[in-house]
Image: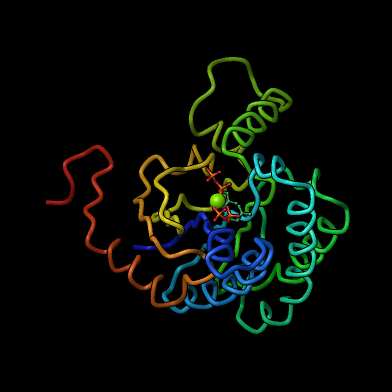
Length: 229
Ligand code: IPE
Ligand code: IPE
Ligand code: MG
């Protein structure tokens, strides 16, 4: 069963450069694909869609690009609210949200609150997200918690991650053709099926999603065992 798809939305810059456009135009076009894919995933019966929108390492980019992305997050989360209500999309986030510019944080938080009762699909945006940062934040939260001394278990650490109630991703898609994880969901993808598409994110549509899901259905997941007999 495919409950949760995670996507590394990569290739916006290359998409734009190939068209002689500034990188920001790629981000703009990429942001429009989020709605297309969220709707298509909902129609496929997927319950959670986690999208990597900004990593803890993306601050290294030129300030003008970072500022553009922050404005895009602000604009996206407010402009798409009616569409999210119409399509039963619940917005959530993972990442160090408190370090986002105030305008972006406020706009995202407003939409999270407004969509809290939508239950068709959860759109979980990874914003200022890093897999290592998440594990460090979980350990610090554990140290602060009122726990009895003794050894930490996987289950206990897991409960201190950003979204402990969400199922782990069944399928991780990376667009833009590169075979790396780039610090995404390090803890949660231990047994996730991986799929790399050469298509850049602004061109990744419902048909490409369907192909990825089709590939997933051909996989045999064994979780370290011998699989179903
Ligand atoms: C992904 O596209 C979007 C973000 C990382 C914010 P890129 O901007 O990384 O696009 P490429 O990889 O340079 O083509
Ligand atoms: C991963 O893409 C981060 C996001 C899609 C938000 P990057 O473009 O930042 O990854 P690298 O630098 O190619 O590894
Ligand atoms: Mg990239």
